Image 1 (tube, rainbow, N blue to C red):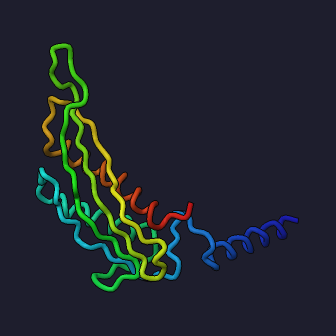
Image 2 (tube, one colour):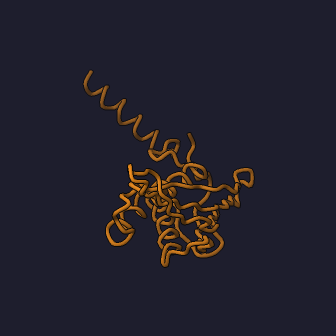
Image 3 (cartoon, helix red, strand yellow):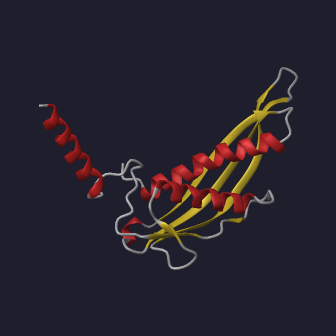
Length: 167
């Protein structure tokens, strides 16, 4: 009986992974073999130096880590392009003496996704996320690094889900 159980588990494992019918990330890349992420230019009114290349790299890294697609510089089966359209710091909460107690950094990107193998999946959409930090802290060094990490993680995952997740 125990041997039959192991054979059943082995058969199920081979079926699920060998045929490619299931992905643990939920990615649906179809017949695509390659992807391309064009440079996300920073067109926000307030420009943070290096934000554009950091975001572009974060999106490339996430797709490489969660799919078996190969990154190419031209002619990708799946194409991501767009621009950073918002980089804004605004006060969120006030103290009793009408000073900001907390600030919010918001970053928004406009993304155009093209699937050259299935044009019905193409879209253009704006994605946005924020990071709240103490008003007494400057958005530099570790605070800025943490803010970018949190925001990029959410933005790139939202873009991935909108383009490749089969939920």
